[in-house]
Amino acid sequence: MITHLYIKNFTLIDKLDIDFRPGFSVITGETGAGKSIILGAIGLLLGQRADSKQIKQGCDKCSIEARFNLKNYDMKGFFDDNDIDYDEKDCIIRRELTASGKSRAFINDTPTSLALLKTFGEQLVDIHSQHQNLLLQKQDFQLNTVDIVAGNQKLVSDYAQKFAEYKQAQQRAKTLKQEIEDNREKQDFFEFQHHELSSANLQAGEQEELEQSADTMSHSEEIKTALYKVSDALNADERGVLANLKTAANALRGIANVLPSASQLGERMDSCLIELKDISAEADSELEGIDFDPSELDAINNRLDKLYDLQKKYRKDSVEQLIELRDELHTMLNNIENSDEALQEAQRQAEQLAAQCKDIADKITATRTKAAKAVEKKMQESLVNLGMPNVKFVIEITTTDLSDSGQDHVEFLFSANKNVPLQPVSNVASGGEVARVMLSLKAMISGAVKLPTIIFDEIDTGVSGKVAEQMAKIMQEMGNSDRQVISITHLPQIAALGTTHYKVYKEDTAEGTISRMTMLNQEQRVQEIAQMLSGSDISEAAISNARELLKV
Image (cartoon, rainbow, N blue to C red; front, side):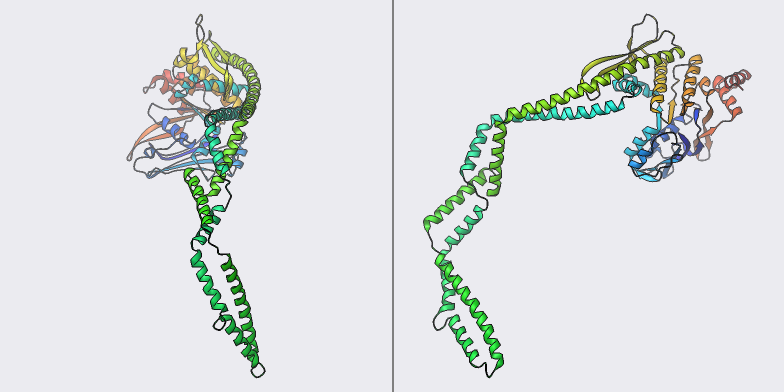
């Protein structure tokens, strides 16, 4: 629950620093006093989008901070999952907004994203404003209400996962069927391409080898001339390098006995002689291997032309890519050949998952049907107590095709008067009736989900007198059930039943008009409720009536 709220420089609020208490609290104040501003600030803390225009005029920054006691609510897992320090008795949420439009959010001083803040905020506070009455028109709200009472979250979660698998399998089968149809239309073309590439006898690396051979053969005369010069330079009888080097080595050996260093030089020269002889032999071998054959060159060029043509035709850059395409076509043709079996298997898997979904959906339907009866009974009792003695409230569940929420269409049917047929609640309920229906639903839901704090923003619109008192008793009972309930109200009957009473009012200062909020003591509550009863001119009768409502 909220234990403390601090607001600084937010719209008309320069500074608000106030404690909140458990149980049922009420907030009153004249229209326009700033109650909606406080709700807006709390909304920002819960992850709503910020606007720099919300910063108080003349200020560069606004800050909103709330402290929560989470002792009675199992939320430690959220903190562990998101690596945030956990203090069950003092959880601090802060939101800061600058005039430049920059927004920052913190949970226990840990910076967090707006999405994470919103996820956390939804577990802390439920703000029910008048526009939320429109939720009654939404089928998913009605369905979720039944599911909450049914306590079937595990089943619904299992179903959602299985249904997602089913839809994926169904899509795979549909895609495969379309691919098969498309491929069969192109099968002849694929077979022609595969035959052309297969008959080409493509070999990885052959293009590079052929290009090298063609280049060598095209320059055979040039190569022969160069190799002949090498051989001549090394092997000529009198001027050849080998003969001269051998003569020089022998000369060094001849003086080795009188010049010791000559022996080492001779050995080095012998090493050079061995290497040059090896070079000479390899050059001669290369020379013998050079044999220009015009027909062989033509064959090589023809093969290269074939490879180049295939690469151009199929828009590939290498023989390796052509081989890859050939293999892909082979696989594709095999798949086409075996496509009926593959499609049957894909459809079988989809049907199997559909059957599993149907099995879980049947179990969910059973839980919803049972819960619907319980909801009908509770709503009937609650609405009778709220001034609808002839009310009928029925939940109609009809079977539909499998969807992401199951196989059920849930519709809340309502009739407030005798001899009036049941119709969808959104079609027949008046504003005051919708408010009572929503309050009854919220009271029932809150008991199931254990929300720490529920704020009702003028849920009493369209009701008065005894009905308002009964609505207040429901909120009071909710507040006594280990929850914090805060009601923003204009009705004295509701304000009087609050355990704690806050007043929001405007005050003119030198800096302009600002909104204030204060906790009222007993006598101040008498004055406030008397004013709510009689207006600005408070009469003795109003004060007496206020004391009677407050039982003081």
